[in-house]
Length: 335
Ligand code: NDP
Image (tube, rainbow, N blue to C red; front, side, top):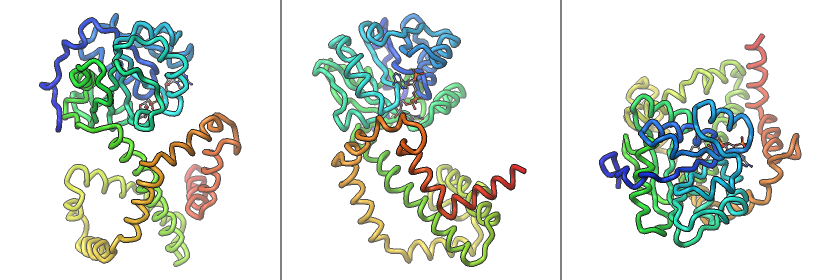
């Protein structure tokens, strides 16, 4: 099911106090879109610690509250737009105890809802309105009156009006211009984490191994970096795939290329890859194993240097032949 502007009745937001918890990538974009859609500024409250994000919100004319407890008390609609790993502690300890029992809580990602990391009460609406787009594009596409892909779902319908509120919210942030897709926290989380843990790691590995094989065959670092990604050819191919079609874009390549790509792709049976993908989907993502592992390292992500597990992973990746070669090429280009 796809919902358009005409499916959304903005009347359900009349006189409602709309609180944004977070004014970062999504918060800043969505709050501005919402106001430009006609929601009066007095109805909007930005809750943010005293810092540059709060200053930015004030500079854009928003009313800002630094005390999360006070902001929670007045919310009829609460956008939860702080980073996913921050949400459980902040929401459960400082926000949830002060919320009205009938508040509508809006999440832009299914992660914490699907893994049941947030404490809701049954009367509350829990709604997912998830733009599939970075915040700056959520804003710029809206300003240019263009749509962006957006997933919508009612995860908990405490008031019985959850869908109307979700659609109204999707509309005021610009999510129904191009059509908002009915989804669920489970679907959104499965696809998101699958892409991050199965699809992209394989693509990174393909590039890393292709680089090593071609380098061993005598290709230079410079030629390889440009041939493989710095020319932006892969970016262009994906753009064409989005515009013209995943398979149809092949027709823009030379005949030699088309024949080689189709013959090569059809000769790989994909059985091992499919088994590996299923393993990630069922044994890491859907069963919550990855979420448990990530919860254990969350606090370490604030640390400096190699005590931060993310920095350690970067160090290891940068040691690869591709990583080292690219660093050399970029250093040479900078001089
Ligand atoms: P950001 O990293 O941009 O969020 C920054 C905001 O969170 C700032 O207001 C920041 O305020 C606040 N914040 C960060 N840490 C804390 C903390 N410990 N306590 C209180 N406030 C804090 O988040 P995003 O906009 O990227 O993500 C928000 C949601 O949107 C997530 O659920 C994400 O999955 C989803 N989403 C994000 C997309 C993206 O493009 N980034 C795309 C689609 C969905 P302060 O200045 O106080 O740190």
